[in-house]
Amino acid sequence: MKFSFYAIDLKKKIPLRISRGLKSGSRNLFLKIRDGAYSAWGESSPGKTEGAESPEMMQNQLEDFISQGIKDNSIYELYEKSREMGIAPCAYASLDMALWDLISKKANMPLYRYLGLPKPNKPTSITIGISSKEAVKQRISSLLNDNLFNSLKIKLGSSNGIDADKEMFSEIYKNIKDKKINVRVDANGGWNVNQSIEMINWLSKKGVEYVEQPLKEGMENDLKYVFKKRKLPIYLDESCRFSSQIPEWAEFVDGVNLKLMKCGGITEGIRILNVAKAYGLKTMIGCMSESSISIAASASISGIIDYIDLDSHYNLNPDPAIGVDLINGITSISEKPGHGAQLKKEFYAS
Ligand SMILES: [Mg+2]
Image 1: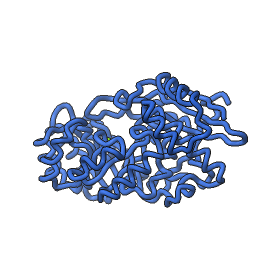
Image 2: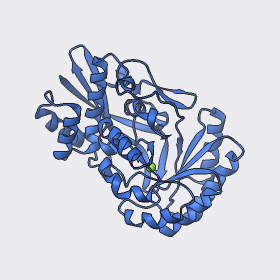
Image 3: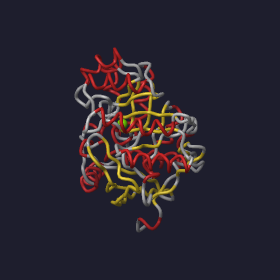
């Protein structure tokens, strides 16, 4: 097996502001595995909160891991070993998804089918970051014009407080309330207990489906106060990285949001889905700043997930990868063997 790494800058068409700050792009690490006639692809998006802040850091960790030998272990064993070695999940995600890509290519099957899963079948939401009234008005009108999406995920938790959140949401609501559009809200931990209760109550009257991560990561003990009075389902995102965390908070939430960069790839992603279902929770899949490669890997397991938020690649200029299509609002994958995505030739020297 030959491993090649490529660090590439991803630039967002529209910078995304969430409660913790503004993001206009990322420098991601791409991994290509060559094994005989097969090529397999993975992607890692770094993050301060994800344990590795740069492609260099992620590549060092992965080279260290690979140098110990990976040939004699199953994908499941390798994942466990990566956790024992303290490899950042966002770094390990590229290796995990590339190994799944490789194994399903060798079996000559699309990855979703190799895993025994249905095809992606639910529309993705498209994310609208925290923005001014004017900016949000323009964004909504261009989205409505394009008519490509029927679900929106609105980022709230503004540093200017819940009045600013209500003002922004009202501007959006005014424009979409008569249309068949699903609306979800993500506070990214921007509210305290009282604000969460008030906002969830307020949003429940505006046709919102659910609210994600009302309280900051680390405040999970306070979830019970919000949960008791909640008027909408509550999903955990930042507070739930691994399947092992689900039992502790299952009693106080309605669902969890998995991301390959948070958990370290498809192997743990599937375990999250299984544990969440065992605890009667709904599931959701999201993304960080990712191109079509990581999105294709995520979409490969999305057929059994309740809510889909796989949209970061639509906001890239350019997306350095190919392999994902938008069909009837669904982030769809090909019928080619593997997850079906790869870097475009011009972005790497083969
Ligand atoms: Mg979220």
